[in-house]
Length: 213
Image 1 (cartoon, one colour):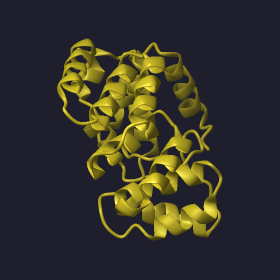
Image 2 (cartoon, one colour):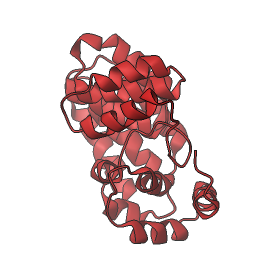
Image 3 (cartoon, rainbow, N blue to C red):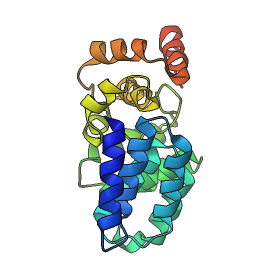
Image 4 (cartoon, one colour):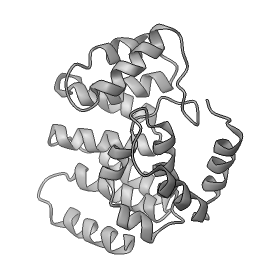
């Protein structure tokens, strides 16, 4: 249950002896699962005001900011900690600047991703930019995740128990955008059909009418 996940993460955050930016990012993710976007954004604001204790904390915060589509905040965070970011975080910065229309800067960042698990997507995005192509994603944005990454960020069991969550829609969107052809497409579309969140209807209409990009 997402309520249990929220309560457990809040308790962990209270017990932490250091700024728990990683935990706050996780909490924002669980709050999104419960469609509590206002409080989720508040947790992200709090996390952004803290010092980052590790590169893992920076990465997790970038990931959850990406799900909330807070591109400007990813840009500001990665600028602040520029000396410490690795190639994976560099990819998130590339997506953020591309989504803000700064394609030349994004192209340099994507070309610079030579290690880590985002190399494949960075290569594809770099090629698209080199020939002037817009991303072939359902919402026309430079998407941060493939479906397997989204599945790894939050338990599918939790999504299944909260089928009307906007996070269900996020997961299906990642499947549609998946340039690496993720798994379980039929099951995911069936799940989307059961979701009563308004964004589910919007996404289904885009899929049905082929209004991509």
